[in-house]
Length: 97
Image (tube, rainbow, N blue to C red; front, side, top):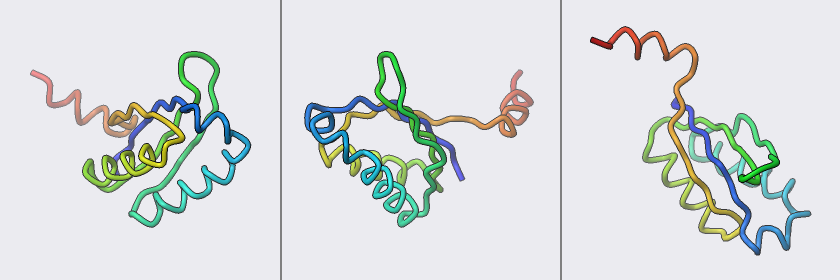
């Protein structure tokens, strides 16, 4: 599985319904699992982002599809990135010239 990290910013709609966040996280977890993924961590954060999410999907296309679907609900805006695990780092470095 490929690991991804997303930085989330709540929209006005997401803030107005913030007390629903635990249910939204649970629904997101189910949606991820239903598409072959796994929500590993969800953290509320202080600072420029409202939350950080760490998750896995089998491929970039599935991750992109789910990120767009979650953002399309209207509660958040997300910036997603591919994350390399500690176990993947040696393989990356070994290929360096």
